Image (cartoon, rainbow, N blue to C red):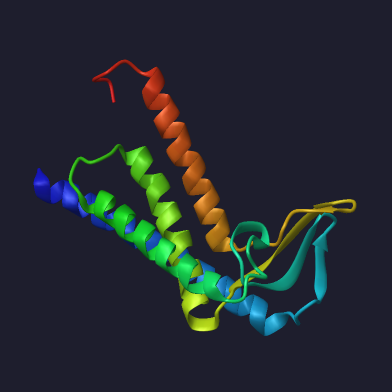
Length: 166
C-alpha cells in the first residue's frame, strides 16, 4: 500500500513538471515572437503583450530596488519544498487537495526559474474589458491560481463533510 501512495505522489510531481514545461515553452514563444511593449490582439478582450515583471502578483514590489528578487525566490523554494514533501507523503491529503498542490508547485517552479535566470518573470497574457486591464500573467500564474482554487474547494468541502467520509 505504501508503494502505491508513493507512486501517486510521484505522479503529481510529474504533473507539476508538465506545467513547468508548458510554462517555459509559452514564455519562450512570447519572448521569441513579441517585442517588449508590443500588443498583439488575438480576439477582443484578449491580447498578447510581453511584460517583464520584477515584482510579485500584479507587479507588487516591482520598484523595490532588487532585494525582492531573492526574497521571492526563497519564499518560492520553501513553499515548493513543503508542497513536494506533502505530495510524496503517503496518505497525507486527498487526491483533490494534492491535485491543487500539483498546480501550485508547477506554477511556483516556473516563476522561480524566471527569477533565478533573469531577475524577472515573463508575463504575456493581457485580458481586458474596454479600458480595464487585468495585470499581465503567464501559464505559471494560471497554475498557481487554479491550484489555490482547488485547494480552497477541497478545504471548504472537507469542512462541510462529516468526519471520516473523506
